[in-house]
Length: 499
Image (cartoon, rainbow, N blue to C red; front, side, top):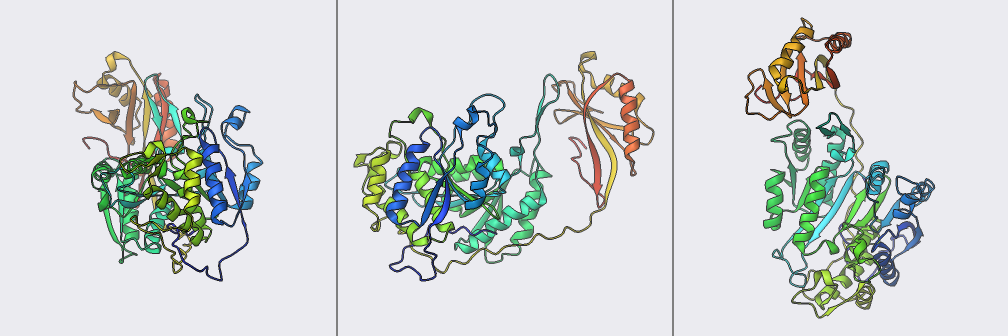
């Protein structure tokens, strides 16, 4: 498991065993405000003595428009493999169909399963109602709805598949606990919606409970995502490390950054087993491009995370402390201007203010100090899953159907004529609400119907094929099937409302 330390902590002397060679780093200047904030950040890194050798990799809007639907040319992969580390400015994904999210492509292709976003307050210098806020959000980065598997199934209904795997849950949850332990954090909170998505989010919660038992030194708690988000917005001081699924993490990390004072100051790390990517959390803001007005603080913070990842803790701390000094001195960009602002600076002038303060220590904000004793996070080998008995017991057949005033009793009668004796029709739902048997006339019904055929004993695939042929002979348009399995005798499917 790749280590990621929190921003490095200052020391007067550099440990002798720190690698002094310059480390190749892939650098992406990005789109919109990206080139401006990247230039500012690279100037700070050079002035602070960062031992990196930037190597530019082209990706983004220009590559999209040149015909590369992924946003970068194929030869970019070679450089990324050579460096193993990337510092990336925001990218613009063109509007319209056919363009893939570059961030999602990078995260999934490179196995960047952990998105790490520290969110701390800089009060009173950056306005916030929560001056004690200091939390880290660790977001699963590869699965969930971001699998991007969508279908238009009927004239009225679209579908997006939410995919959650046990290995994915195990990796991100264990990473969160290892991160907490390595960085002196005391509590990990899991956020899910398993009161509704009992299987997908329920798996995440189950894995969290299993793994938390291995870390008795760290407090573990679980909350439902909606109340958790509200509490992050209202009482963020109650959180230390948050671990959650992809979509929830995407939303809540922006909430936390804004509550802390500004998304413009927030950086993030994307960590995998063999690669790491560091970036600001905000977008490319094309409306600000070329105006020298953007806040480079988020990318500066991301660069500090990168230096910590590379073991250059002293340089990372030097940069972080200089940034804190600039904020204390009222050197602010427009987005964070407030009562303590003494001068509103542009992008490059803000970088100059940070550079001028390299080597200084903040007087009021907590000083970042070198943590030379921080231990590497151990690599955990995957465990072979135990054997699980899997039995096929039926299928859900989905239909587009609008005949007979969308009366489910009519549809049920047709399907009962097609059913097999050993696989009878058990239930019909519409948009997840049971409408047969015993449905209510007030229930709104779309053209999308789920019809469950289920046996009390295991069946064969050939039985289901025979069932589908009989349904086809009735002239019904079935658009999809989802087979029903039991796993060690437990249903591997939701039972449906009213069951």
